[in-house]
Amino acid sequence: MMVLNQVKAPDTSNKRSDNRLDICLAVEVTLASGQQIKLCTRNLSTTGVYLEKADHEMPPVGSIIHLKLNQKLGLGEAPLVKGKVVRTDEHGVGIQFIED
Image 1 (cartoon, helix red, strand yellow):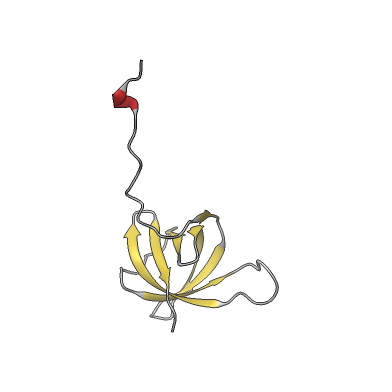
Image 2: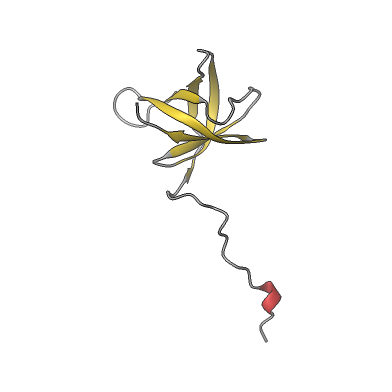
């Protein structure tokens, strides 16, 4: 006999269009003020990244930042990437990559 109250509906709260890779990478973030802080990624996709907060004050939603990986993943220098803060929570910030 199947108990209906144990069947869970699919989670529709995740509205992301791209899959995320859970990975911790050291990044250097440059804020609009020019201040640089070192953070760690929690996850990464082709359209954005989630950065863990650590002990730093995080920029508010709408802020433009630049970030660069502190480690090489392939050949050559890691690119400097421009992003926009699209969400914040008690653990960190969600960044959407943007083009100049």
